[in-house]
Amino acid sequence: MGKEFREVDVAEVPVEPEQVWAAIATGPGIDSWFMGRNEVEGGVGGAVRGAFAAYEPTHPITAWDPPNRLAYGGEPERDGRRIAYEFLVEGRDGGSSVIRCVTSGFLPGDDWADEFEAMQAGGALFFRNLVEFVQHFPGRMAKPVTAFGPNVVTDWPALWAALAKEVGVEQLTVGAKVRLAGSDGAVYAVNDQTVGIRTDEGLFCFMQGFRGPLVATHHLVAPDVDAAAEEAKWTEWIAALS
Image (cartoon, rainbow, N blue to C red; front, side, top):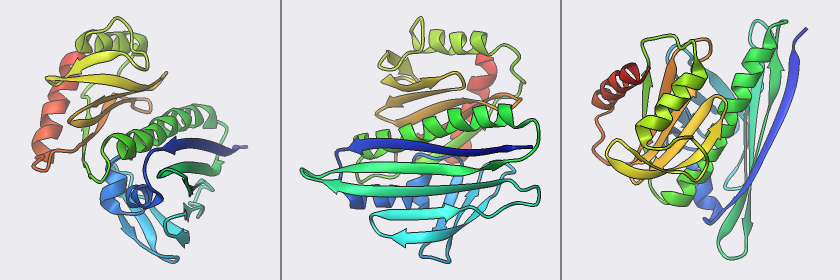
């Protein structure tokens, strides 16, 4: 069996298309809002390569039209699984841009439902990350910090409630004012499996690991970020929370 899917996300941001292009078509740009570490070999025939724990995909670039269109992926894996991304960026009067992201592909097997739900939740967060980053940190890049909790979470509502308490609110809702890691911030994204918090230090993202622990996928804008030290710190922080 399996599941064909196609998800479309659209947003307008107050930056020029060239700034959006820098965020979607360079390794440091993608690092600033997506998961793990990334590199881009530009142009049709090039590739977008990622590294997130043991997951290291290589997606061939199929369309490259700076700063308006980028498409990559779509190659089937051995089990028939495939995923493709297309970004369309349209400049508007007044220096703003409309970003349209189309994510499509196929999930094989009869147990695709849980993976599809996780993909939808994660995809919504990452697109929101892109919008937040180009809007609130224009012209800057962030360093990715990824930390995995040591425990498999068995009660996610309780975990999210603990996170809410830790950041100083009763409930995690978009727009809520919070305090995280010594800085004031605001919640900009919430769904059943993810939370995004923005402070002046960057984007702090928490995700429900697929059948596993809480995962932090942060994007820190300070120029002197020690990623290894930050990952150790957040691993300890998650362990204490969960």
